[in-house]
Amino acid sequence: MQQLIRGRVLDFHADPAETDENHRYLEDGAILIEDGRIRAVGDHADLARPDLPEIDHHPNLILPGFIDTHIHFPQVQVIGSWGAQLLDWLNTYTFPEEARFGQQGHAGAMAGAFLDLLTAHGTTTAVAFCSVHPESAEALFSAAEARNMAMIAGKVMMDRNAPEAVLDTPQSGYDDSKALLEKWHGRGRQRYAITPRFAITSTPEQLEMTGQLAREYPDCHIQTHLSENLEEIDYTLSLYPKARDYLDIYETYGLLSDRLLLGHSIHLRDREIRRMAETGSRAVFCPTSNLFLGSGLFDEAGLRAAGVVSGVATDVGGGTSYSMLQTLNEGYKILQLRGQKLHPLSAFHWATRGNALALGMQDRIGTLAPGSDADLVVLDAQATPAMALRMQRAQTLAEELFILQIMGDDRAIAQTYVAGQPMKAE
Image 1 (tube, rainbow, N blue to C red):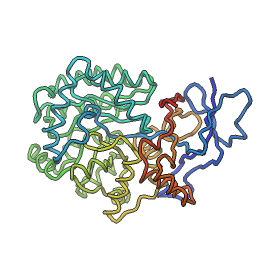
Image 2: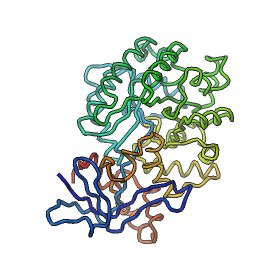
Image 3: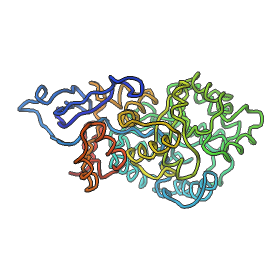
Image 4: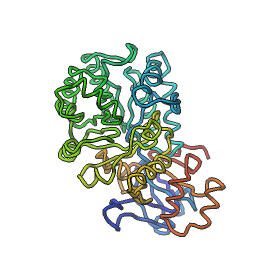
């Protein structure tokens, strides 16, 4: 069945930081959807037919759905927990909370709530850490499959420096990950991410088996953490005294590639930056988390100049909002402190096509190109009285986007479509 989604349409075909010819904007545009895919995009007058069902979202903006490249599914009930930096935060809040995901039925209850929150905030694809328990990944993949929602996820592998309830072993971590991977990777819209939490919680033996998995399944993403916090870096290097630096630990076990997503990547040495660029390994900027946990300021311009591709992400629950709009808001402020600028066109490119590029999935998500999955977000820049008042003085598309970026949140999400299906009740 075909349907037409009408409104002001915006998507990107190039990076605004690299060229002025970067986007398509249609004042009265339409997106033709059939069987969950985009068939055509153009002016409404050219695509409308009397027999074609149509939903009109004017005067709102329609963009590709937001992509969140780093989020922790088991932390939904510890988001906004007070008063700690990274390592204390993990021990005080995260690990006890993740232990609950071994309880019968808990992961399933949380998975539905988690995906509802994502789509309520305009996010249609996420790269998610699950807990150590295989049932947490099972629950998330099952819930995403029921929504036909593209999910990249994996159970964390961690065999030391945490409570027993959230530990596996090198062999069980490998076995559980492989079983989940073989069941879910490439099933519908689901993809598996091999997920060693970080070097502190994995022994050399576990990272060796992680590398074995990566060699066996080279088309899987790998997600972990890198250089988020200075204390974390010192502790990591004390556990791996032969490593040249933090990244060298992952390099030693064969994990560096353009499938590797390195959350945070704040306090990097020159060699690490060079090797990330040479291997295509991705940095992932998590601004609300970096501010909330006092971790540091991401160097977007420095990494870009070195040739490192970066994603941007919420990092819930260290991150404080599911909203990619609020993530871009805090990202703007961090880069201001760095003496760098985040233009609104660059911001919205980053949360859509830019994150798709970081994942190597730009052929399916992140744009409105024909053949792409019909994942859309509809944005209302007048969603609150304060936004509506500010919009009275906006004169350009860039100004409107910046109002959404700085003042917007879930209230600015008029609708979210996943594979052509509306996710929010009208």
